[in-house]
Image (cartoon, rainbow, N blue to C red):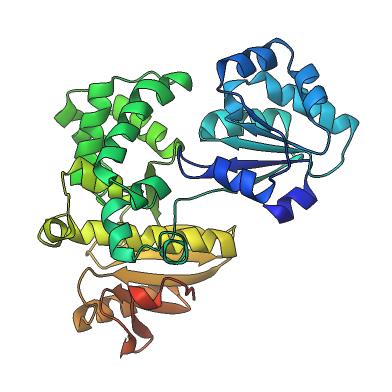
Length: 375
């Protein structure tokens, strides 16, 4: 954030609702004036005359929360920035990726630095207050308030607010009951290949409706669409993307999993563990290497790597196991996948502590040894 603040006139922080954007902004820049554009009186003032409000409030900088609530503010910002190209003037926060990025691309291209704020990583939760272990994070999810409190109650309130208030406020027309049913179906198929026609048939709607809802869930940071890696490789490969609800707390809430004991015996355990590890790795990868891309790898014969990170043409392959990870057969498959990909390294990540070689080019790492590690 500070680096972008020194580089651009405006900085945009994107992230899901309740992920901590406002907390982060006010802790990093405690002296900046703060405006919540979803507050009715403030929104009315900015809607009536955004240029005047910005000029009157911005002296040494200004935080504008939920900036997408007043689309006219982006045109006003462009005029102010073009008149004075001082860096570090406006800090914009928002939770609606499509609305914000459309406005930014139309009005603020080249004038704004963008950073996405994700929920907590395991190392952040361990170092914070209260200190939380990764098993707690796995069960409750990685949103700060969910991880530190009653996650079931928190997630139910979050879902109701998301469906009944947030989406309509973003101009997204949805049927709440249908969206809830789709979320539950996606939870049961966590990490599965996306088949809009099959989901539509089960829900009694067209595949176009399913695709639109999936786009909305992805653009509001609740869903990850992981695409298959296929670049100049002469093999028959899976072409459909995999879908993951990005937070395990939401996944467990939708499936009525309320304790670690229930999770340990639940059929979703493997997919849930895969989600936790993938999200933790990718959140830290984004900070260390912002331009990296994430994929999975699966051949037509079923050989698979759960996660492939493409760091500027250098590939790293990961297989994620909910058990110990000491699986010689999985290591052989991963070694073949890594060879096909030309990956620089390959790792099996499981729950057993420690690290050990499993085969040529393949290393097992416990998640405990991964929470502050990246290849």
